[in-house]
Image (cartoon, rainbow, N blue to C red; front, side):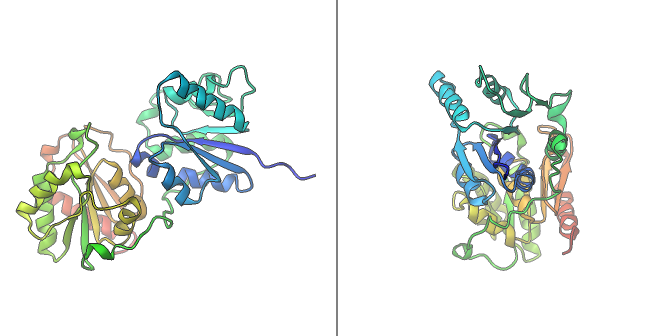
Length: 312
């Protein structure tokens, strides 16, 4: 008699960049559960990407509403699915609560930080560990090992409409609106843009509509720069990253996506955020305690070294 497929839930709400930092872990869980039914619980904004990836049989959406009705809806959904095992990769107060919402049981196997989890992953300094290392430790009891770098071959699009030359580089001078402290000064990006243009590489500035002012600062110093702010879908950003000469960006979601695709990327960090989170075969973290100590020449030199990783 054949064994029934297991029903497995992965929880990853997080932000845009966190979704791409978790890609190797998603893929490793998929391999481990190749014959099982695999569901992802994520944010509505990330659900289309999760479906596009082809890694999940089902994608559930959690709007992270704090109302009682929203929590009851999550409880109904989790109980109705009767999951055999849950990998809580978010592992924060909200998702710890989801474990308690299953009262009075039965409870699935649960990997995460929730009290009462069958496979607890609580330890001092958990949030100070690089993302992949954290997941490696969490999943080790199940024999699941994430790869070093993700396979994002599914994330691509035609970029012909942007009219870029063969040699172009991506600049990501913005960050989430609530974290302007993560931004290396736009004038420094302008200097990087001018240095790249001097080599015959066209700088293309990526960002949201609210970051057009940053693109304008860069263009004032480097007229060759192309403003792509608020013009790229996520698949198009993947297509640009796949074909770019290189990229420089802050600790923000689009930068992590670009690096994960495999573009030679320099991620600029100060002590405003932990310089431990980025993934990709040709990514370099350029960190100084204070952005004032990071000059453009050093970043351009780091970009050359990132291009040397794994071939030119």
